[in-house]
Image 1 (tube, rainbow, N blue to C red):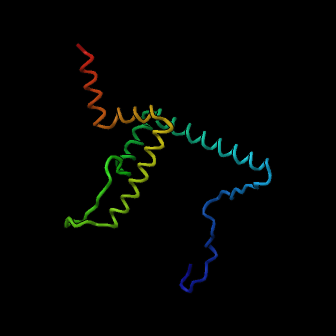
Image 2: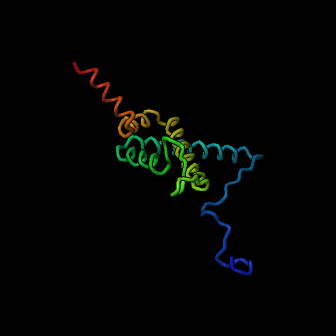
Image 3: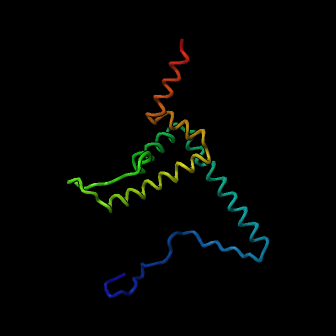
Length: 139
């Protein structure tokens, strides 16, 4: 938009390059295609997350993202330099935390073994328990 409120030639309402998919509910073939497409996309997403969590580098990168960018283990509370609460920063970080919780729950549903392995490898709370278990086994 320019200053006079008229749209520029560059202003497009296209959010992305993919065409909108509409389903004609009165056409059984269209409904079946939409269901098949949806099912395929869900399977592709599940296999993507399994591949990420089955790779050592993928687990390390996702754990760092989860803890550093998404405040994964504790809801954030931001304050300014003087210690006074900063509600805008807190709400911003709460959005990051919500993303982290979404990812964690998705991993828990789609690949709980990969999630557990990621936590065993990188989370200090899990690493300590794993070391304790090894000490108990060794005579």
